[in-house]
Amino acid sequence: MSEAVKPIDVAVGILMQPNGDVLLGQRPEGKPYAGYWEFPGGKVEPGETIFAALQREFKEELGIEVLDGEGWCGVEHVYPHAHVRLHFYISRSWRGEPQSLEGQAFAWQGSVGVEPLLPATVPLIEWLDLVRYGEAGQSS
Ligand SMILES: Nc1nc2c([nH]c(=O)n2[C@H]2C[C@H](O)[C@@H](COP(=O)(O)OP(=O)(O)OP(=O)(O)O)O2)c(=O)[nH]1
Image (cartoon, rainbow, N blue to C red; front, side, top):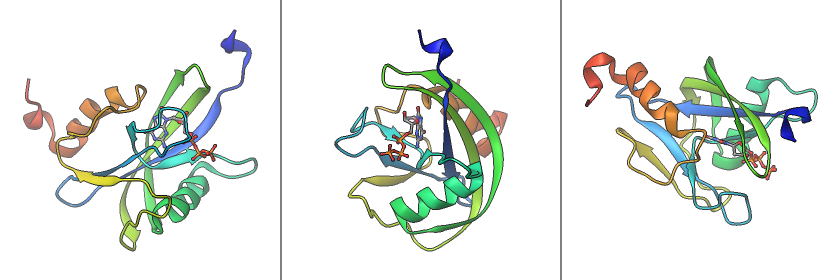
C-alpha cells in the first residue's frame, strides 16, 4: 500500500495582499483533479529547495517573481494518483502581475468562494482565515 511510498514534496504559495485577499488558480485539463481550485505551486525537483521550487513554479505558471515567503504549515495527503506532502508558504512580497501563462483561470479571493477546492487544501481555508482576519473573522 501507499505507506511504503515516499511522499512527493510539493511547494505551495499563498500570495497575500495587504487586505488579506489570496490568489487561487484552477487546475488545467490533463492533470489529476482538472478544474479543481488550488493555491499555485508544484512538485519540488531533485536538488531544489522548497522555496526555489515555489519561485520556479510561480515564474512558469504566472510570470511573477516571489521575493519573500514564510513557511506556514505542512499537510500530507494520500490521493489515488499520489501521496503528497504539501509545504505551504505565505508570501506578501512579489514582483509583477499574475498572468495566465498555462491557460489556467485564477482569482483573487477574500472569503474563498471558488469551488471545488483540492481535498487537501479545504481545511487550510479555515486556518487561513485566522491568519488573515483573526478570531473576529470567524463566521461561526
Ligand atoms: N499546487 C497545489 N497542489 C496541491 C494543492 N493541494 C493539493 O492537494 N495539491 C496536490 C495536487 C497534486 O497532487 C500535487 C501538485 O502537483 P502538480 O501535478 O500540480 O505539480 P506540477 O505542476 O509540478 O505538475 P507536473 O509538472 O507533474 O505537471 O499537490 C494546492 O493547494 N496547491
